[in-house]
Length: 481
Image (cartoon, rainbow, N blue to C red; front, side, top):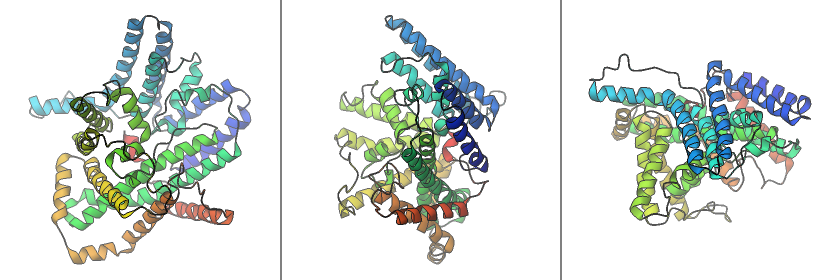
């Protein structure tokens, strides 16, 4: 089931009413209902993959209890934790990476003949997200950061909570698990804010991302038939497509969770207003970058090592992050590209130079800040071309296509209603997020005093989102990861 479907439009109010009015007085029954609703939500794609979620949940829950039982015997606890990590990563690797490595092996040693060694397994939706969420629990139990729960239903609810099950945010047990251990109380103000955030997420997905996808898919599908200016335009549109798509999903997920009295972590913090690559990665897919920081980068030594070792740690993190996105060399090269951009900052100790939002006390950025934001956006967009390409050869062909120009055709395209429509709505999104860059999401509207103006904005965004809605619209990009 997808957020941008009519099925979900019927599913959500039914679950909301049952959650609060039928099961709301009994915490255990309420948690059990969360599990059932979440399994229905996920099983709508393919019920067979529910077995994987159940196995991941049960093994991580059981390993937490065993780790705590043998907490005085660190060697045994370590082996239990390692076994759970290997099991869960093994399942992830089998479905997501086996065919990639098998095909690479065949290309190197068998002349490309892969008959009989490929499994052609269907990648379960969101497997990378819920696997990492479950792993964080057992690791945190081993580290003593969280006490294990004996309530298996509570833990299953933590792993499978449907708003963020498929594409995050990747929650930590220290934040989300305790919320299923205490009684939730409906808060009107929180629910209203959740609806605003959902509306903003739907606007970014349906109006921005899905419309940008029409031209982006056309450009990447026929590079030779497009001029350099149009390919550059498509690259820029993809930058907004992937942001609108993924941050839109996160907004819908976080907003939906608020309807159920659950607070999820922020996953995006206006990343395209970043002044360097380091700031961009503190603001983009925050739940994943902090996951790699806490569970891989810091255990490797983090930034407490010599400069060469810090550089190596940084390179490893970006390569792993790239490979996490999918079994394709394009993702690895994309990760390496960002590592090369990041390394000069970390080697000169400038990687944490910008911690606050840009122009916190001003309406507009300075000329220098604007230049930094523009340069960072250009570099990120170059990386997005590699990320979006189906292969490295397609990425190279795309960059080569930049050299082809046709002034008359380009001029007519950029002033066409199709392109101008996209540009106007992108400008609306950028303007709204700039105004509310201090807030959790774009429709916080904290700076607008008059209720009539706020409601006019809400109504306008709702109407245009409904106008652009298509029940057969593309799935969220990060479903494939």
